[in-house]
Image (tube, rainbow, N blue to C red; front, side, top):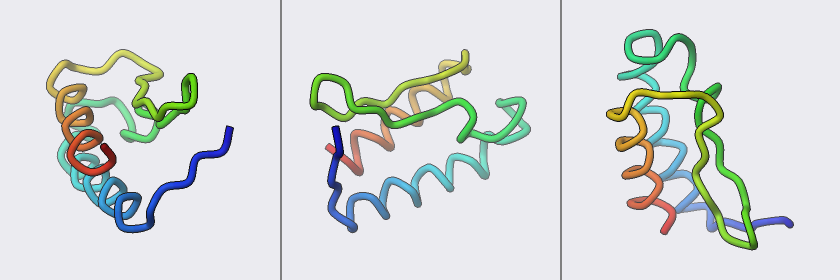
Length: 71
C-alpha cells in the first residue's frame, strides 16, 4: 500500500529524526538511527517500528517525534 504524506509533515519528521541521530548515533546506538527505526504501513495505518533493540530513551524520543510530526 502506498502512503502519501504532506511534504510539510514529512519534512518535519525527517528533521526531527536527523536531530535525534545527532544525539544518539554512536553514543546510545551502535550505528546510525536509520538502521534501527523504520516507518511501515500496517493495516493501512502508518506505524513506527524498531528493527533492532534500542534503549528505552531512544524509543521514547523516536515515538515522540513520530507523534508530534506525523499524527
